[in-house]
Length: 479
Ligand code: AMP
Ligand code: ZN
Image 1 (tube, protein in one colour):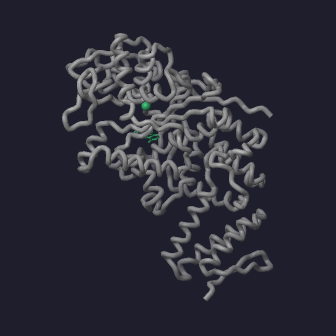
Image 2: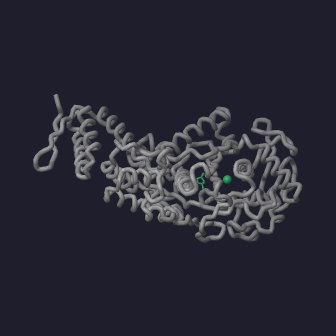
Image 3: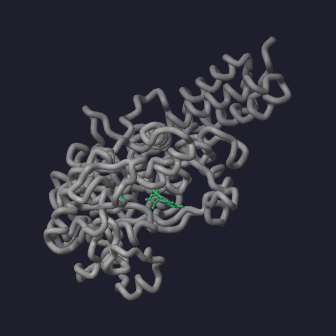
């Protein structure tokens, strides 16, 4: 059976194109990562999950060792300086703390670690080198301790966002500054005051602008041109447009990356997420507090909720959608036999990698069609009701990064905590009834291992089950 060709919607051409890597033995992807000044919100989780699915798919298609995925950490930025000052801690303390929580969040969301997570502060030399090239080739100029990119020097500027210079100037809020030659010129380097982070450079002590960071880090780890560049749709202009300008002009290339992919925006219960509307929610809060919908949510629930909408569509983040995803996972959990050794987190094991004919072709076709995850999730659901082998189900789950084991363990821990907190027969009735009906569902799909596990879990809490002749199960609290 042949593997379907991967098709990707390319923002550069506004069409869905067949993906052809520059070098199939080394597929290269760059995704703009977080600015580590505050916890990541649930909108930020979208590109993390979307490009993780793509990473898994590329590894499956080209071989895990032939794919490099770079997701940077922006650890120098004026928002960071301001927040560290506000909190009275050092910049380093703030970025370390924020990055630590970020890494915990992405792990809980089931994302594989990218091949490299470069930090901006460790690539200042490359930024300076690019800026020097831009000045030498007449695309940038130094003025007043600043270095600016000379936008009119690049005839193709605006190609990604498809705007002309005139349109940009009419639409944008341009910072007027005496050292700027043209209104659209943007900062590559700026001077730092004594209390601001800074590095020595040919233009004095200063720090980089935001856009140059990504040009430098992608160059350092992927080269002058690479295959895929991703991020949220809000980054198309000016961030990605400026990255292209810097990299193409510095390296004398026509393209920076061949395929530009952008995820749509996330809104919460029909409204833009904002602190003033009170609907702003972080990944951390969803996982560890009862802020959203009055309860904590497990990482696989957040992930499945995200995948049930196509990545280019806007997504409405609602309690109802989370509940639906949780119900799906609960059903899948009752079908899955967890005593079968699970495959690796990306659906492969070293000595038994999945053969392409083991994955239902419709599933591969859906994922390969510009990551049609909503369709893939329907096919996955069908595979559970058709009771495919546990190995096939594991491979399918692995390709989407849905960790059913983590879901089951997370639920058990949550149930246990609930039981301990509420104690007493009255409060536990609903909870025990739920486990009993899950056990019945497991038995209905002949999943004896899971059914026994639930019986044991209840027994450990002092609850005995009795299976009646009419197919029902009753329970009592042992004294
Ligand atoms: P930022 O920290 O704002 O640079 O965002 C990090 C990533 O999250 C970028 O790829 C953004 O495009 C993306 N992003 C930010 N807000 C949202 C949102 N509400 N919905 C979807 N993606 C978002
Ligand atoms: Zn970037």
